[in-house]
Length: 425
Image 1 (cartoon, helix red, strand yellow):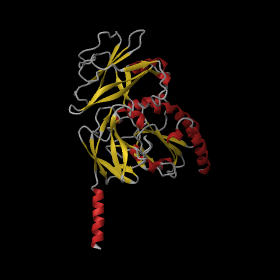
Image 2 (tube, one colour):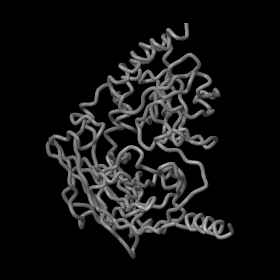
Image 3 (cartoon, rainbow, N blue to C red):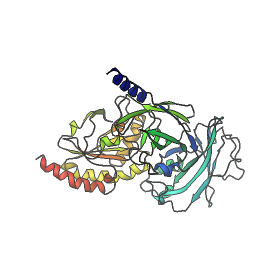
């Protein structure tokens, strides 16, 4: 008996200590295609030349805008960007790739206009884009630098509908960028090796999260099909539920190229927990207007859609008209919407302005409040837009994801709202 007990003890001890150290190597470009997308970041442009710029091309026109990419890099400096828009000629993009303040000694950036952008930037209408391009910058440390591709795009402000002059001016002084680089390696889970990608979603140049909102993510090809599918994306700063087992990243090197991965005794959620047919998580929160919310208790007798979105998310904003139209049509019959914005809590006034303009008249709360566990975490939301249609009485998830996008929402509501309305009479 004691031998059996000893063997069990050794087995569990061995399993608990089986942390693995994973070494990662840089990938300069192509990560966006492999992982299915990127988060677009905003780069504000100004007519004022930053002090960090020491030398510029001699043939710049009179219409120049400047910007700064605040990315960690071997030089420990800012990465300056210049957008030159001469009259009657194509605009040009210059990027201080090596961070030395000289924008004349870098490899020219790609920057083209008038081409077909279809499929290149998910969620954006090609006709609304003025330019698209990329540049390679230096990231990493002085000891281990590497080339990293940054993608850029810019709206054609003249083709955007419904913009006030002030909004057009603001968009004209803005460029969007996204990471196309990352780190890759191999990870072993339950005895099987899988491809892994470590990505800096906010394009800060750092692969080690400063906090649980840094959005440094692990993408693990668990089904080994060569792409990242639903349930294969995880936040490095949080525990991860994989095959009903919970893991976590326990340590990372300063440059992110080495990490220790192993068992966790913390609570975690997975997409399997919030699939259609499952019971949605219960939570309490505070709405933007200060009122308390209890979910799903406050939605008895209703069909409610939880909609995760953000003002900076172009695909999210493209879905808003569909949601607004559905709300207007079905609200009187028992359809409710609960918006979960992934904007920063400090952007409350901005969120309210957008909601007023877009006729988003339903209750709203922030996904990250600092007071309760993240609702986005409970629903395993790693990308937006994301939506869940839920029966307010049972908490059962009726529909989710892509089936609630576009005209799919109308079809789902036509199926579930009348049935719910008749059952509660």
